[in-house]
Length: 203
Image (cartoon, rainbow, N blue to C red; front, top):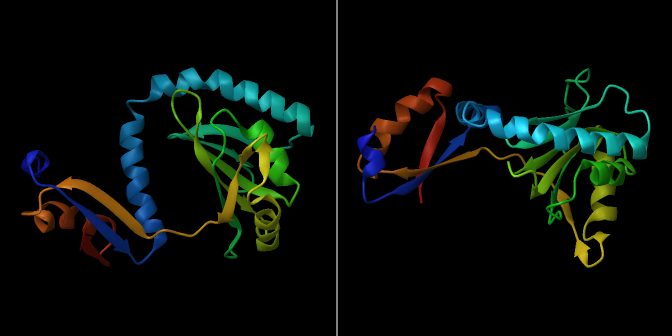
């Protein structure tokens, strides 16, 4: 398997899982491995997260049991006592074109205007800036629909408009830098450990 990583010819493999959670499991497993090398960066960003939390509380008042926690390159605004995500489809929205220096203290109050939030996930760089996109999951789909109607192309700062669209579950997992000569030998056994119903698409 190691020999395939130094091959001069590479392909990208797309694995289509029958269950969304199976693809998420593989991604989370890889992120946990990488996270062992990022403890120092996570610790360095903790102070800024606390400052953002304090500003958020000052704007919205009592936040109850909600928390702000950075895990694996994303920061979650969520209620740890409410760990059951909505079962109805259409509750989550994708937010794009977010200014890199805009954080939860501005985003949560804006999106909470349109309904109770189950969780917000803001994608973060370890420099402390965000990556320009986030996900908000509402407790009911009608709140997500309203947020899309009201906030898509909304001007959050002068001349800066965000995009808000429905979030769609992805069952694809991309694997790059593989040798085309031994894809099945090096990849198939590893994926079978997680799930036995998938197929490859070579790009």
